Image (cartoon, rainbow, N blue to C red; front, side, top):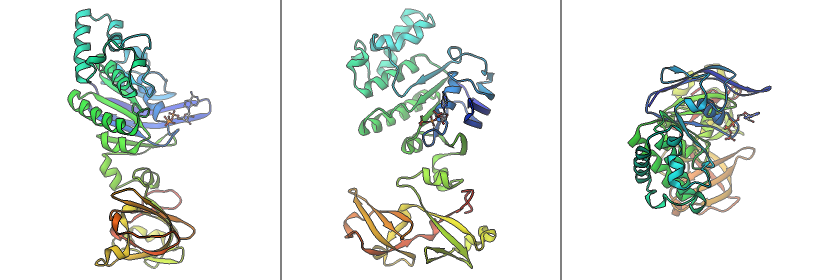
Length: 363
Ligand code: ATP
């Protein structure tokens, strides 16, 4: 096991800067998730750590060793790819054993390790099969088994669950978490799936356009996003953003007035007369009639779409220039038709405010 440290890592491809100024240190044994939209640079960072890419500048340490010029093979990291990259002509056992054979490990030790790994991943009964005789989930477990068998210091996983169907993905995600708990190997995991990021990570690193937006524990990043990008990336459905002009302690949102809570006003001293972005999560909006005992601020909206999901119902509503999504938990209580004008309650305690230009969170 080892800590991993990136110092001002930058990677350019001709004149495209894929990542820039990437600095963080993953303590020994932790599970970190790199997350962000397509093209934000996640895989480039992972591949740089693996030694499959060379940083244009910056330093990379695994343990206390500067590995900038150490080839991938000698870095003692194990990478699991999205497409598993299993050897098709080898059996499961041979695939798991391959890395050890390359390192000339004693045959008996290899056999023992293959058996142990196969047991930990419930692969014992599949050891003699070839990859094409396995399901996607089983192939994925073999790819993990190959990485585990090598007893590398660091695991690098690049969207390892993205080829699995929804149920299998949930199960394998839980298995991965258990596996990390048992093995305690420093793990860096790339995904664009925020559920994977939130559930697996000790820390998440949110990236956008090649730069780190925020690093933190998943729940605290969700509760205190550094900026609009992070706020709208984490959460499903995403946080609603409504531009509002701030004046005399109120926000004017498409000719509707929302009072600005007292506790927020200090943070908005410099925004007087300007447009800010109000952020409100779909679960912090509710249909007023369902909450009769609560004194609330309301927004009048027009219902555009109702999506019943069993326990909850998603509603898309128009303002009219902008739109909001509402997540209502009391599914049975709602009878809405498209075109209905309804009054949405808004929990001002849960309001976020962002600078409309920079996107930084003001409150
Ligand atoms: P995805 O989720 O779609 O896999 P990502 O976040 O992993 O995306 P990267 O693959 O790291 O993103 O790519 C980051 C940026 O660098 C993108 O703009 C991409 O087009 C560019 N890039 C990556 N590899 C190369 C390359 N070999 N040559 C040129 N540009 C590249």
